[in-house]
Image (cartoon, rainbow, N blue to C red; front, top):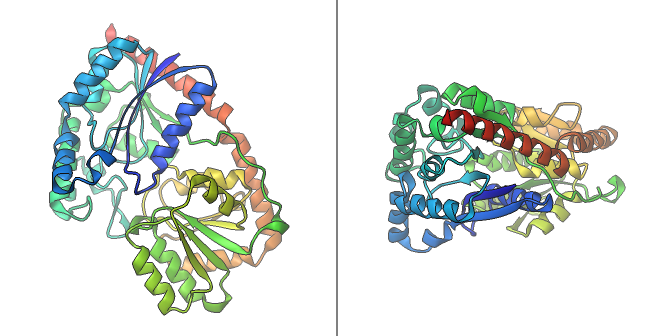
Length: 404
């Protein structure tokens, strides 16, 4: 097949799982003999332009006629069998779906988040899950609370994009197949009004999983991998370690973000300097190497995650996972099979769950083995490619039906 991939890369200063997933899927398609054409932009184009860059991003978010015109030209020049869109925010805009409609080419969209309904994309507000806009099919709550970057002004263009394209039925009229990352996300998109026949579940994958490090060769540590901001619940994790005190295992926090300085002060004030370390941003290879030496991955998320790629990486490495019992996570992390779940936002529940796990080394080894079985059954590249080809086939059938 000849596949045209469309993606707006997020800025390089904030490593993104969506960017990683896009690159992995591009490599997967090429490795199976498909011809891949790419149509991309990067948020770095506006990131360092101050107010001018912010204005360009805001104007482009709702409808970018230049992206529409350029994508039409790209389709005419390359004649792809299918267009697969990953992210259009902020520089491409959903106008790209009108290019694929006009050129009558089957179109697939991966829903990495909840941005078709939620201005924050994360379905979280004030450190709690929030589905007001999705359930009401209205952007008024987002505008009221300033959900994007905690600013009503910044929220306005994102909400305008959502309201415009929902009113225009862009999603149901122009997209032939949506890829959701879990059954939970699929159910939420059904509630929002996306047609059931166009919603398909396909998780992330890992192309070449490394061999797990033997348990006896691992460090006595737990690991968090992700961006340091409220929706990820990283402050809940640090508070749990503060409560735990001297008996806590070593905690390695991999990543960076707006909460780094605040968290560092909490760690210093709590006398946790020897227990909690911050690595900052590291390469993907180094993050995998650090994770492979851990005995537990912790995801204290407060938001409805899509499918954190670090989970299937942990599974491949036989690292069990302790995760918040919220959104998609209980659909991925199975109690007594690959990890443990705890109440979101509860330092007490997190600390108790991790303490129980760390007190049972044999049980943790068994959970690690179970995690790897989960990976082999669901998250290999071969299984993922087969699922992707079936979704592409169904998208083509749906596009053909539209023409009749």
